[in-house]
Structures are given as structure tokens and as C-alpha cells.
Amino acid sequence: MIDLSRVLDHARIAELPNPYFGKVRDCYDLPDDGVNGPRRILISSDRISAFDRILAAIPWKGQVLTQMARYWFEHTVDICPNHVLAYPDPNVVIGKHVTILPVEMVVRGYLAGTTGTSILTLYQKGERQMYGHDFPDGLRPNQALPQAIITPTSKEFDGGHDAPLTPEQIISSGILTAEQWAFVSDRALALFARGQQMAAARGLILVDTKYEFGVDVKGNILIADEIHTPDSSRYWIASGYEQAFETGARPPSFDKDVIRAWVAARCDPYHDPIPEIPAEMIERTARVYIEAYETITGQTFVPDMSGATPLERVRTNLAPWFGR
Image 1 (cartoon, rainbow, N blue to C red):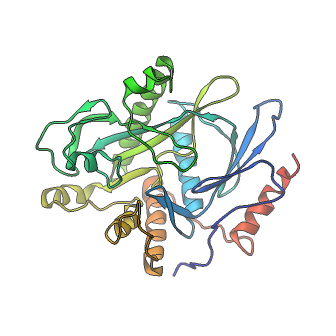
Image 2 (cartoon, one colour):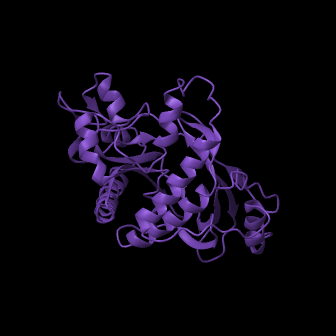
Image 3 (cartoon, rainbow, N blue to C red):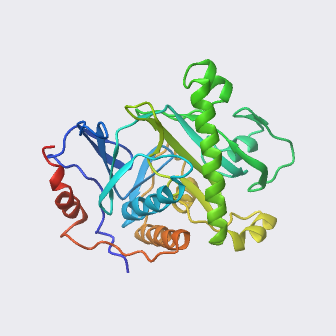
């Protein structure tokens, strides 16, 4: 049994300066250390979000995501530099403070998804020109695309809904320069190719993912946030894909579609109140995250049980940064 009460539902720590609370992470900004420039403390809570809303808190989710992102950052640093400076706690990253570019780089290898901006949702509404790409008639749900494509969306920082963009719109409106777009689109496709290759070796399909890039004080573009985790990516289990595709079923997955699909089947998640998610669904989702970590990385997940609560442990491990 998973202790459903042992969750980090927030990480609001008064001793840390300059707070910023996001949908999933609670962050604090530290001043310039004279070497790396300004730094940011990013604490991954156990909150789970979808449809631009917080749905629940999932035990161990924050540790799983932080450690899985660490795995991927360490395996992709040759493709693109990242923001990481230190890991003082299983849920915490100390990183360079970057100015996030206002475009989410969503890379897709399949006609899939459930959100309002997914290409499957838009395709089923009859759209055939999306994100600067043309799609033929006759495609089936969850079908592999001829090649991976980028479907960028606006990055809304104040709770607004992300909106589809085309490369032409991004450049012509000045959201990114042509040089910035060329860099991040090239790196996004290269990161996705590495992710698909490594996932395939583990018996998985990396279906789609999103990347966030930021600019540091020296003007370097870095990959930030997280990469190739179940919160930012869709994974299918390769052995179950073909049968699911032929029968029109949803392929077995390792992503938060577990909860997204449950909620979407019971309400309009963009407008209706979210129904209470039962404990069995919370526990099932926690197990999915843990299983995903172990399958994707090949490592055994060891939950950090130190501290009376996860928040107390995080506070203790971050105490050296109080007052900095």
C-alpha cells in the first residue's frame, strides 16, 4: 500500500526569498553568486495538472519527476546544455535562473492526444492545417506520423490557455528571432530523437513531449524545466501498441492520461468543476509514476522517507540556502 497522506502538496517556505508558485513547482529566486548568475530553487510538488488545472496530489510524483528529469538531463547534455547546478533534495533542483522563451516546443511522433491543442483533437474536428503542417485525410487515432514534427504553442505565464502557433507566426511577430527558432527547433528534434531511441531500448514508445528553453544572463539558450518525464511526455508500452492501434483502443501508457482520461470521461474539464478523484485512482497513478521511473531508467525507485513529512525534509535540506 502507498501512504496517500505522505504527499508534498506545496513547498511554501518563508525563509526562502522571491517566491513563485506554479501549477506543479514552487520556486524561489536566489541572487547572483558571482559565478553562475542568479539562481532558482525549483521544488517539484506532488501536484498533478492537466487541462490547465490542478487535479490532485500524487504521492512520490515530485521525487519521481525530479529524478527522472535528472536521468534525462545527464543523458542529453551533449545535445543541449541545461540549467542544472545541484540536487540538494530528491524533489529539488538548484538551477541557473533563465528567462523562459515564450514558446512551448511540443514535438509529436504520432497522431495522438486528448487536450484542446493536441493534433488528434484538432484533426477529429476536421482541421487539416495545423501548426504550419498539412495533414492528409484518412489518418487514424494514434497513427505514427511519417516523421516527428514540432507543434509549438504560446507559453502563457499567468494561467491563460496555451494557443497553437506556426513557425511563421513565431518569427514574424517577434516572439523568437529566426536564429532562436532555428536553434530551439533543431535541439528539440534532436532531443526527441535521442528520447525515442533510448525509450525503444527499454520497450517503450516516446509518443510526444514538450520542451521549455530559456536564456541565461550570458545569452546562452539552455533546456530548462524537465524533459522526457511522464508529466511532460506521453509514453506507450511498445508491446501493446499494434493491437491497440488495430482495435482503436488507447495504447497502454505511462503518462498522466490515466487521470486525464478519467476526468475527461466525466466532465468538460476546461469548464466544469472537477469531480473528486477517488483514492484508488490516486494510488493507481502513483504506481504508474513509479513503474514509469523504473522502466524508463532501469533503476529501482527508492522513496525518501526521511523527515516527519516531505515538507519538513525539504526544509531541512534547503536550510543552507536560507538567507543567501
